[in-house]
Amino acid sequence: MLAGSAAYAVSKQAGWRGTLEDRPQLSRKFYALIAVAMVLGLALDFVGFNAVKMLFYSAVLNGVRHRPLIVLVILLTSIPK
Figure 1: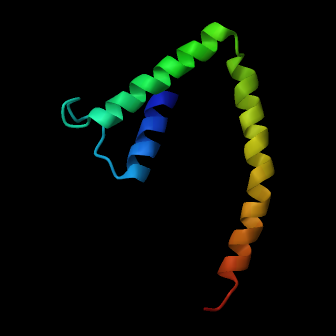
Figure 2: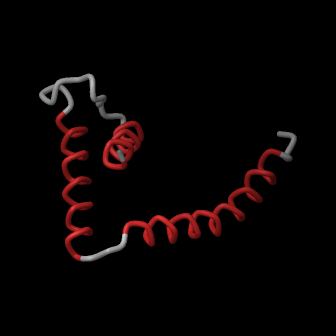
């Protein structure tokens, strides 16, 4: 699930064609991203990383970095121009 989500996000940002409805010949980069994300996830699992701890720390990091971004968005939207 995470590999597919990451592939969708990167493909959309890069402007590549890619959905799971497409054949692999039409969207090679999209399917390559899915494969790389799966291999990276498997490698992290075999090395011994705890997935639950990684998810917890990423949630904490997101919570810490979102506060300044929310302030920035409020400042930008309060400018009349």
